[in-house]
Length: 464
Image (cartoon, rainbow, N blue to C red; front, top):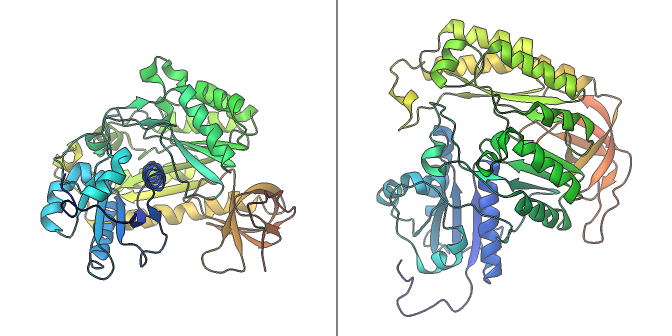
């Protein structure tokens, strides 16, 4: 470490702004940093123009995420000397690329690795040099103060790291081996999140369905956790992201079908359908097993909403492989589909393979797959028109103050489109009954039927 000004401490707390990039797990890390900074007397600001210190919490998952992180760092670096005194880079790119970032972007003043969250206040003050590449080893828990940044819902990180051998993924290189938190710890934090206004508690990890294996809970670890959460906290909605096909517990789906508070939603990234591609990916399962799993989920949870993501342009993926995936998506009839162009990640087995589709071909395959999915998604949404649903209202629509927006149980935060609310009133962060009046491939439109029973601390907002 090095002192900011030798022998002279700041006379006031710095005004800190935060930019959080990447996945929900990163979001939790951001909230822990914000909670620690607030507890230590730093002034937090949402205005980057007002901040004299900006922290960029980075993502290093795929090329697009890394480029977004680098572009954001450069944009912030351009503010140096114009009110901005200190640029702090945190998160996944620090554990993976800190030395390279330090060489190429000298405007970075401080580096915060994944295991440095508790020291964020001291490191913002004193500075920290770029560390060598390393794997995270720590697990943060309910003892770490968090400043929530999500309206009406909160992510609950149940585990860190990953043990899966997927050949395309470098996450274990910096997030480390899979390690679970205790059930008691998670129930305690879930209670606190609900007490602070969370109507939905969303369980996240790199492989959430493997939760508890390292604690001796076997294949039923996530089931035991959800049962404990249902019994031990009052969250109206409990959701989990993400499911690995070979570790998904059928008894968990049975519980989902029985418990109204356990959201009827399953995000199960399958990545591909062709056996040759899955073999090279080192992904368990095959097309028939995947279809059987989806059918089983629908049988156990009749109202379930299903999401999956796929990789196109994987090394040695042929046109026939791509067409096979398209036929699978038609058969699977998923409610939500995401697709990513393959990104070769250094240090992974797939990056050593020679045959990679051109970016243009991969983008064409991605566009074709998503276009194929649109009428499937639209068909499921159209069935909701005329129905009354419980909806979590998240706030005013970004595009216009005349609309609110929210989600029903079949929509996870930030990835499954929006439910635009054209009439009625509700406090952001509360649940309301909503009548669905229009459906589109990506979004829904509804009218609020019942006003929220908002707490005094929340202001009711009306659609105009």
